[in-house]
Every structure is written in structure tokens, then in C-alpha cells.
Length: 264
Image (cartoon, one colour):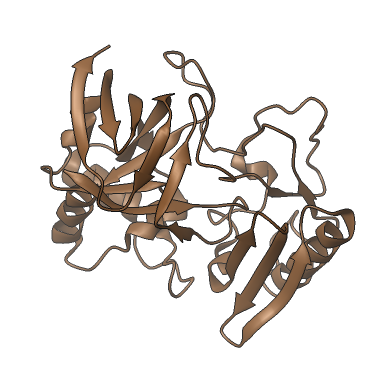
């Protein structure tokens, strides 16, 4: 069993960034994962006192599938966010600075204005708070933190592909770590156990419930598969992947081993 791929998502709802390796810290998510979000005009978020808000308060693929037409990259050293479409780079802005936030917000408002959805448009704003991650999941009752690493078993995706008789892009599920070398759905047996993931240890705390965002093809931005319906029909659940909290930090890299430990 080993790590097949690693991704982070610096801006909630925008594209994935592949990583060859990354250092995990106890009680934290991947560095810069979901660090920023694009809040709707109606969203109240206080960066001085950040609290979890559901994805409906931000631009998101579940509602705004056109976001999948954009490809983004974040340089943590400079704070620069690059946004590209099929024509090439359309914006470079320092999202860590007020003027860069304004530029990103204005661009996305104009872009999404071509695909109008009620409540999404002028008045979008970039939000960030030190130490806060805009994760979809609330803090789990059996967890010690609200920052998780999400893992998906590629064999479970393969089982879904066999059911729907068409390829299913793993990035539909927007996970951090994709793993291989174990039977389909065996990841659900890890809940309550620790796994060694490269040089880190992660406690698996819950399965991930899936939503309509998985309908969106990350390559075409089209809603072309009812993933949730297929999971329910074929497997009796709407789960794909698991959440884990980092209990011992360390480096992880593509190709590193995954070893399941004892229940905790």
C-alpha cells in the first residue's frame, strides 16, 4: 500500500495543485490547503474570530460548476495566485495582499457573471484567517482538531468505474492523498485506527459523505455523472474516502508506504 498522488487546494472551490512531497504537522491539514475562500456577498465571516461555515457561504463547485474551467496555482513564498483558462493565464495577483484580493474577487465576479446564479456576483470577496482552513467538514466528535487530511483509495474509485461503465476522474473527489494497493472500500475498516503515512502518523476518524459537487467533470466543467446516485445504487452508501487527523508530523511523498496500525 502506498501513496499514489498528493494534492492541496489553496483556494476553496478552485483547482487542485499536485505535490510531490509535503510535511504534515500534528493537528493540521496540508500546508495552505483551503487557506483562502471566496465569500458570497451575504456571508458573514470574522477573520478575528473565525468559525466553520458550510460551503454554501462561498463559491463552490456544487453550485458554481463553471469554476472547473479555471486552473489556478499558488506560490506560498510570494503570495501570488495565478489563474488560467483554456486561452492561458488571465490573472496574476498577490492574494495575500488587499489589492490582490480585490483583483481576484473582481475577476471571479466577472467570470461567474457569465454563468449567473442567484446570490453569486458582485460583492464577492477573498477571506482568510490565520490558522483557519475552510474545510467542508465540521469538527468530528471523535477528533481533537477540525483540520483533516482526506484520503481516497483508488481501488474504490475503480469499483465505481466498473459500476458506471465509464472513467471517473479521481479529482472529482478533491482529496489530499490518493492511495493504492489495497482492496476497494477497505479504507472504511481503518476508522478508529492509526496509519503510518510516509513519515507521519494519521488517525482515521470518519468516512467522507459525498455531495453533488462530484457530478462536475474536472476536465470539462460539465455535470456528466450522478456519482452520489451511483454510489447509493451500487454500494448502499454515498461515501468515498476517509478523513484523518495528523497525530505525529513528518514528511510524506508520492510512493511512500501506507501501513495500517492498531485501533485507538
